[in-house]
Amino acid sequence: MINYAPGSFILVGGKKYELKQFHFHIPSEEKIDGRAFDMSIHLVHADNEGELAVVAVLLEKGQANPLIREVWKDVPSRKDKEKVLENV
Image (cartoon, rainbow, N blue to C red; front, side, top):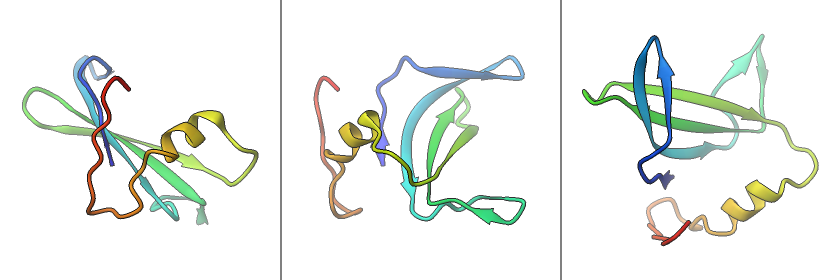
């Protein structure tokens, strides 16, 4: 899980949801027409009342992606371990 600094948001039905964090699932929890995906990223947003809006990005194994490689190198190897990065 990567906690995100304030400033990024989505609008859903005219309501503003601030991006709070994103995290990964391997394999993906979601399926489309019964088809599973290799991995998903959940972008978790919240409004001022704490209501959530989650966007799932479904990923398939393919060519190396520079953005994912950059994020992945800083992800702790254990899910119960926190790593704080400044100026990211």
